[in-house]
Length: 387
Image 1 (cartoon, rainbow, N blue to C red):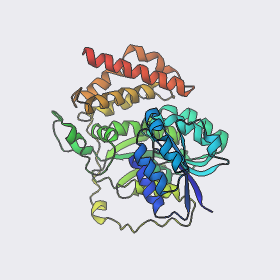
Image 2: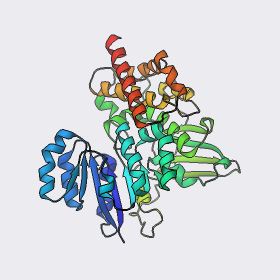
Image 3: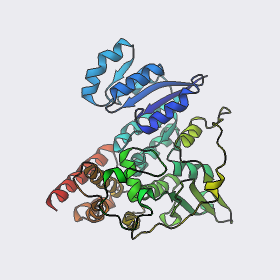
Image 4: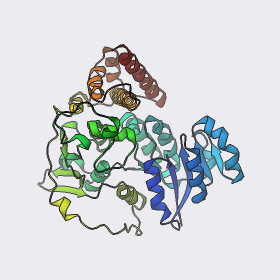
């Protein structure tokens, strides 16, 4: 029997990678739903290629423009996530959330009821709404699989008894400026030249500042219920080592693979299946012999100073942190601020008095999270315009 699959964000890099894996094994998978925000043309091609009968296009103008074209192909098209009960008559096998940003939180919470497994590559959903996600996972007995390479690696290395963990080490490539002594007068094209990974613009900029590692520490803390003092970051320039687990019994576990998101996605799709034979991938001896793990330079990557402000309890701190960073990165990509101002502004704005009351409050709904997100973005715009 074919595994029934839903892909949220099918036109982005993670969604495209997922489809490239499924394309090689159509006999074992059936895609029942694809979604996109704006890229109607691409999702139209995807739906036809994979014979998908249900599509969500969130952008209303694109939805209206393409509605008749999908109807001619007998493909049901929706403009929101309110119709899952009409799409899914019973639980499907697997869903993957590859949507970028906090837009991924709503579909995550809504699909859990209708899927046996959910793979999440959307770190914003986990960081800002993990308490809400965890509640739904428990309520509907849905299995969660992290697909970020670092967190998938940790997931593979640990068992349910996390009390035996002495330290979790998340690795970082160091981005394009690892060997640059002074980070100044950085151009957009240079910040987007990641040495190892092919990713979207936003996450590539976060990788260059190491903000992505701040987010990944928060993500690991929430997913694995681990104290922050047990999570460290080490730089591994070739991105071959993805995580290291140091156990109290003296055993150290290391997980390595090529810097390719296909590998964690492939293994999440085939988890528990005997069909999980990945294309031949030889051990890269040169990379193993040149692991070269080092501590990151905090005076250079000042984003890592934010780690000491992360609260132990879940609060709106995470939403505010992500929203401030999102807005600043967007401003940099639109040439509104200089690169070197990204983390300087972030470190200042996160300490604003107006936010302090939110750092003691736990989010109770998506609406609350989105309201705080909008407030944070508004304050960033005001600050930058006046500075």
